[in-house]
Each structure stands twice: as structure tokens, then as C-alpha cells.
Length: 220
Picture 1 (cartoon, rainbow, N blue to C red):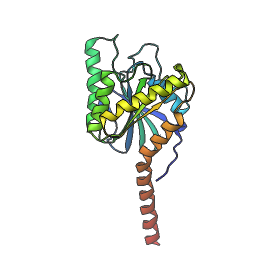
Picture 2: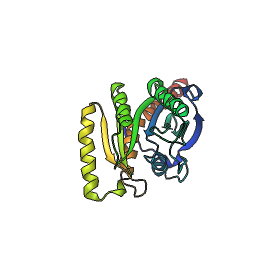
Picture 3: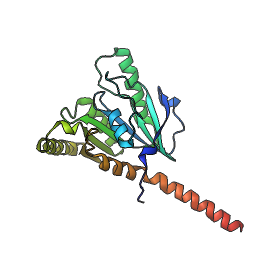
Picture 4: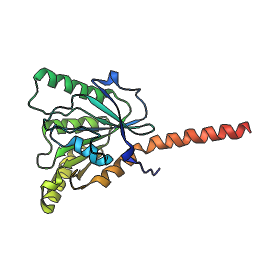
């Protein structure tokens, strides 16, 4: 089923310290995860054509909560706490990483994972662990190599090819693309990927509407 989602209608729903404070585990959620300096908030803002949907911070590691956004009926984007941050207390770091891991392992409506990494510093240990986990659980992964505008065209293409080759080692469904919030590189590809992941929610809506119509026809 082909769908076209209007990401500019995305709006904030809630922030939660852990999955127990999230809404019902239903519908489809696509999670965005990445190191604290990978440009996650800027990417979400660019995706939705909104300047401040996701709060950007000059201090990496400020996103301490699981942030939930509604895209459409039954379709949500989840902004997960940044990982790999250095300048926060160890106890706080452990708490954040626990809530991140718990969400990834236990949230059944998670149907796709977008992993963001700076194109100049890709595939750090935590990035690889995250992709490994997703592949083991059968969750498709879209790797976004952010800040792609920092490299010239030739270097950018070489970096993407290198990471695509590295990603093959994970097995599973792992796609790698360049992305730039500033220049709009890769934004259309990202929207198309999310459209595909969200499509089953629209199919369910259509089935529900058809059932309602059938019921009304039968009553007549």
C-alpha cells in the first residue's frame, strides 16, 4: 500500500522517563536514536519542516527523556535519549541508557529504527551495538550519516559507500544514506522510508473504515 504522510502535521504528545509512562503499546512507532552530537533534533525538525519540534541544545546529552510525537492516526515518532555523552554524571548516564535499552527491547509497536551518526565519525561502538540489537530483533534500520554537507561531494559518496559495505556485516535490513538538515540532503529518501514503515497503520485504518461501511450497508 502506497501512502504519503504529511510530516509537517507532526506534534508533540508527551515526554516519559521510561516506557511505563508512555501511552498504550499500539499502532506503529519509529524511533530515532544516536549519539548526543549526531544532530538528531535538527534532523527531526527538518523532516517535519518545523523549526522547534525537537529541542536542539548546544550541550550534548540534554535529551534525558523519551519524547513521543504524533505524525498521524496510529503513527508516532519517538525521540530517544542521546547516548555516548561524556559530560554528565555516571549515575545519570546509567539511568538514561537503561530507559533507552528498555524501550528498544520491550516496546512491541516499534517497527523501525533510524540511527543517526556524524558522517565524519561513524560506527562508534554504541552505534554498532544498537544496530546489532535491532537486526537480532528483526527491526529494519535506516542509518542516516548526518552533517553530510561538511564533506565535499566525492568524499561524501566515498563515506556512504564505505559505511554501506560495513553495514552488510550486520545482516538484516540495514540501509545507509547521507543526510544534511542544513542542505536538505536525504530528506526525501527519509520521508519515503518512513512512509513505507507507517503504511500498515493506514491499511488497518482502511480496513476499519471498510468494516464500518459494510455494517452500515447491512443495516440498510
